[in-house]
Length: 304
Length: 251
Figure (cartoon, rainbow over the protein chains, first blue to last red):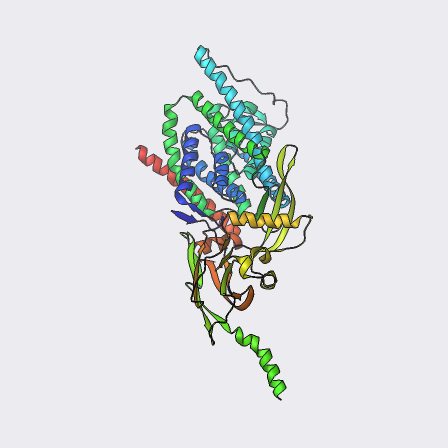
């Protein structure tokens, strides 16, 4: 069934979009990541203009994060105070990100900015995850007990604060900075940033693993909601019909993914996710390095 | 007196000889873009009205053009910088039709002279205006614009797509693509003989979003804040509903 999207101004196959939402929802249910980093490039591939794809996927992430957060609230695995500090940084970061996005757009380099961000971040995060989970798998095979986390080196900074749920007493600057970085990425790449934030919270801030997902979801809801508003007001590029289709597909997919996830082992899941992330990164990198078939591109409107 | 009459007759003669006029019809004079809009077929038909039998010599040919609203476009060219393909030079095209289709009874080169083309702006390159260039090889950019739009199907040349019966009745149809933009579309019909214009007829078709499409588009453009809020409310409600449904299923 073809559906005409009012903002993207293209007709798309509704089932294809539902399928993309479902696939990404399934992965996010399996791996516990938002999946924005997959939705945005997939939307590019089906012909959605990049600015609309980026803005709309932030709206979709709001929905999937709200849906996932409820379970964490029930289990009391959300550190609200940490979430609010991350959020304060995140709001600042998104604003910077949207300004950067619009500036690069006026220079005609927004595609390059988005693609470079994807290549580097996905490449680095994917490799890190792969190495980490291979190591864990080897330890698991050898039967040795998992190593204790190293304490991070951020305890010398001023303005310390107590985070009761995380059991931490650290300076507010590291979480603020993590928030800013994730906010910028969220605006530029159309992602929630969970795949950056979760490792940063564990390895940089030293938060216990059980509160990490809930807290990052809590923060992501507000950053992506804010980013959605910024894109809606400055670029008019949020497509509500597209977002609804993605959300519908994603909701169903997430349930399927959660069931599948319980049947696979955690390390194997992580290796799968790492390989997937690296594959997406390589795919985008090839596009930048190989000579494109068409050297010219069109952009409606005239730059300022 | 006789000399004057002869002069008037001489002046009128070419007009009288070319007294062939177009009468035209359309299957629809407006196109509504709804949520399920999947492109539409537009039929253009008409007849040639004449007082005298068709003149001898070159046969009558018909050219029908359909043009979407003119919009500005930026054309960018990628160049290799530090091993990466990056947008570099660009031109702004001040007015290019968002949609342009030409249907004819025969090869354009044979049935329309360059002079007439220039005068009437019939072919695609003639319908595009590029100004304010920052690069020298402007033609390459304009060619690229035409090539990309031809490939995506919004620019079309359909030689031989007009059926002409007895040099009197003609018809052709345009398949409008699904990614139409709103606005006034201009349809023009040209009658030519031996490459020269005999008559021309213009009409318009309005294409507009209707219903939900129109409402959402206007809201997003003119009340962006409200639109953003509505998107968020929908997202939060959907997320909450999904969770509630999953909980209900578990029980």
